[in-house]
Image (cartoon, rainbow, N blue to C red; front, side, top):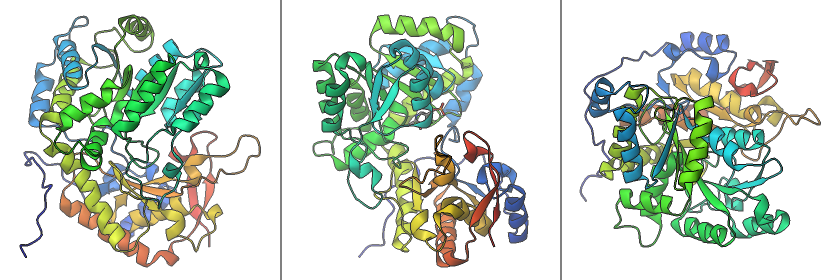
Length: 462
Ligand SMILES: *Cc1c(COP(=O)(O)O)cnc(C)c1O
């Protein structure tokens, strides 16, 4: 037998490095205590491997950095804006581009131009900012994702799919004229980076069009979704990622995108549309909330780097294969050691099942928060809690929400860390798992009223 080969070795080499420092065990214990056992409150200088988020943390290529130098800072009609329009039209296939400062800027504009108070917006699981803007515009979000999305140990190749039966029931209940659009997210973030199938995209689009309902994608992670379609859906093995991505977008009327993810830049986003009249209304709002229609919230150089990032992400299939392959590599090591995780491993991170790991603690002792703190203390890897603390309290009863999934997320930035960093991360998680009964529970010492996970502070229960 030949030695096992790594099929996804990085399709780049390193030209510049940023030193990182590893604290001692004693220093880490002080750092996490000073941060109130909340990984959001750690200083990045105290972190060895930062897996808090993959948002805006990508490494740009030399070609993108060169783009910063030739960005056109003209207030109106910037050359870089036209480069961005061309890239979005070529890669995603939308003719109308409305640039914004990041994803939520695009969600805000889209919600304001399409939603009338009292409307209902069905979607496949919520995303925090997307749902917030739909509600701000007077809409009500209804979850129509398939049931499997909520079951961490059920293996389904397309856990992000919309349940057509649930969608039809919503249409029957409120009427198509109260549904401005279906909010369809690719590679569903809150479900753990789980994809939707092409067949589902096509069916939902046909269903909606027969009834005069628009389909708006959250295409923030559509590239990673395209990869899963290539790997898992019959008939797509020989299609390039570029072609699959443009087919995904063909089953929609427009999309919002946070460019801080797939697009390989640190800031930026856009709303893309087919209908010129809708685009006209979006641009009219843009001037008030983001900036002129040829820069939105971005500098000319940011648009130049973004235009290049969009082309680069589909230039070869190797980029996304490596990106998702690295996440799978980490997930497989952790799972093979017996640590319970959400399956299958998603596109952007590995989600540890904290209720399974810390079952010596009662849920009130915030298992996921406690596990994330213990992982940092072990080797300086920063993860994020996605459980009781993130879920907040019920506004009526005042009790904690206890979500079905109590998770710790290890999110992998794009093109930033090597395979050795993944090995260190896996070793650390496994070692904490082996000593899991020693992980102390936590209780709040400070609890902010809203979005409490960002700034809450805790102490060990003993
Ligand atoms: C990050 C993200 C957003 C929000 O984008 P921002 O750039 O952070 O405003 C929306 N949808 C999805 C799926 C995301 O991952």
